[in-house]
Image (cartoon, rainbow, N blue to C red; front, side, top):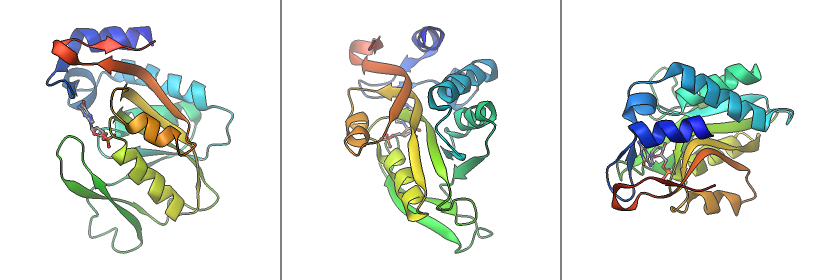
Length: 190
Ligand code: 5GP
């Protein structure tokens, strides 16, 4: 998506050869109008596939997940990182290794909001090593629901997440695919 790539090029900050900061429009401040268009583009790709719910990974998946859910006319379920005491033990839970923080965390979802009747689209901001998305896939499988695919705003295609997910037969869709962040330069793939 051209407009999105231009925004990333203009406002994205290359922190290392592996990490891109997009805090001014995705991760800290959100460009709501752009996010609405991104959600619509994801919805257009996955429409007519019998999806029943959008699952967003907390916290940066929520903005794109919500816009996608709105465009599809579906509810969004948040896969939570901190189980609250009110969620108690009626949960599906799995352990995920965080890319940015290099520590493990628990991803969980209430058994009330996912069931075997669901066909779920997972939405997140970035795809890097694919750990977060794989954790979301595990939660959906624990609920015996099916997976329509994984949509991300930005895929860092030089990292292994894409291939890891595709090799499991999953449909991976990214609105921007970055081939390299070397030398402080953002290079997109076609
Ligand atoms: P993965 O689990 O695919 O290794 O990493 C995906 C998660 O890590 C995303 O949910 C995202 O929040 C975070 N992440 C991975 N790479 C980047 C990056 O380059 N920049 C930012 N801001 N977050 C990232």
